[in-house]
Amino acid sequence: MKKVTIYALSTCLWCKKTKKYFEDRKVAFEAVDYDKQDEARQEELMAEMRAAGGTGSFPFVKIGGASTQGYDPEEFEKLLNDK
Image (cartoon, rainbow, N blue to C red; front, side):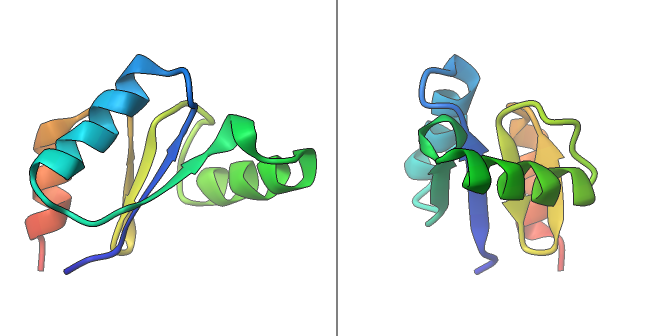
């Protein structure tokens, strides 16, 4: 199973929907609430997201070696199932 990491905001509706999407499919994931991190950690996370092609919007989802932004179930499935 590919490692899934979700970078989210604790108050974001789309972030909550993204977490629920993976929970409902029983896909294990690590969730990082960006807004609950200290400033130094936020800078690290933002740099990591941008290095992976993100624009700084949430949710940002890493699946294996790929990543996507926003709530996009079709893209989640594609990335989970790519070999």
